[in-house]
Length: 157
Image (cartoon, rainbow, N blue to C red; front, side, top):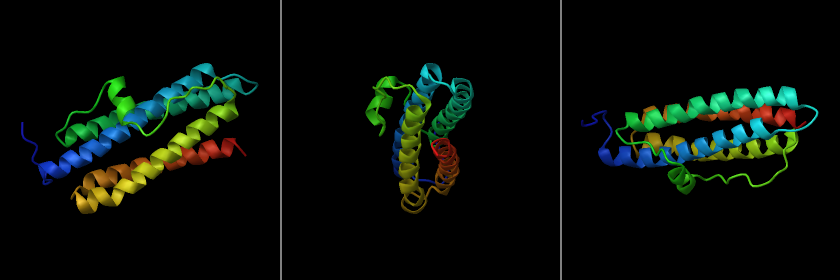
C-alpha cells in the first residue's frame, strides 16, 4: 500500500536509509550491552550486572522503536546480522577485558558515537528532507543516549 504522509518518496528513502544505519548501530550496541551483562567480572559484579540489565532492556526498546519508525516511512527495516554489520558505524568487541570500568568505557564510547550520528541528522531530516517527525523522534532518542552517557561517565569518576 502506498505511504502518503506528506514526504516525497525520495526523501522518505533517504531518511529510511539513515535510520537503517542508526538501527544497525543500536542493534550492535544492544549486543555489546548483553555481552557486558553476561561476561562482567569483578568486586562490583552484582550492582553493575543489574545496571547493565537495565541498559540492555532500554536498548531493546530503542531497537524496536527505530525499526518501527522505518516502517512508518514505508520502508522495510534491515533485520539480519549481516545487514547490521554492513551498516553500523560501531565495531564489535574483541577484547576479553571484562571488568566494569573497561566495559563501561566501551559502552560510553558507543553511546557518544550514536549521539554524534543522530545530532548530524536532526536538521538534515527536517530541513533537507521535509521530515520534522523523524527529526523530532531522533532528537528525543539523542536525549536518551545523552542521559545514558552521563550515567556511564558518572560510574567512571
